[in-house]
Length: 130
Image 1 (cartoon, rainbow, N blue to C red):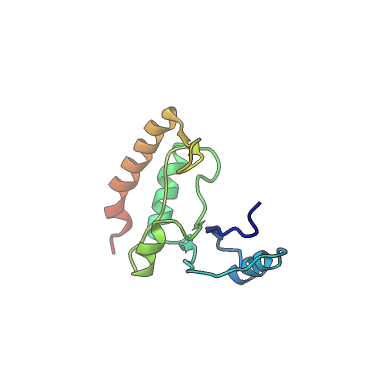
Image 2: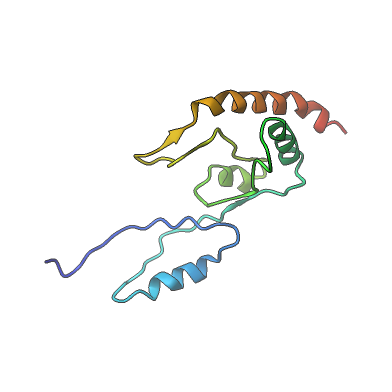
């Protein structure tokens, strides 16, 4: 048996999680040496953003309950846009197993997704009018 193993671990923490606490938890494992390589903050978008309100309104016409949240882990592409001041949200059809061998999307949700995006895009000029 080998006496040593090296692995890369990607921890995608959420807005309500403290990355320092997560790092200490990993360091607390027996016989573990940790070398952090980089960190990306989670994506957080204000609930009163005109884009969030517009997308929520458009999605609510096609979904029951609240169709979204306003925080994502640091692997979200929205983080890169938000860092430079470009409004961004992530929204997609129903599915699970993202980017893995068991990834799937509900085909029936694709039409609802299209309708939601169409409603959202048509309402942008009115929402952003000053």
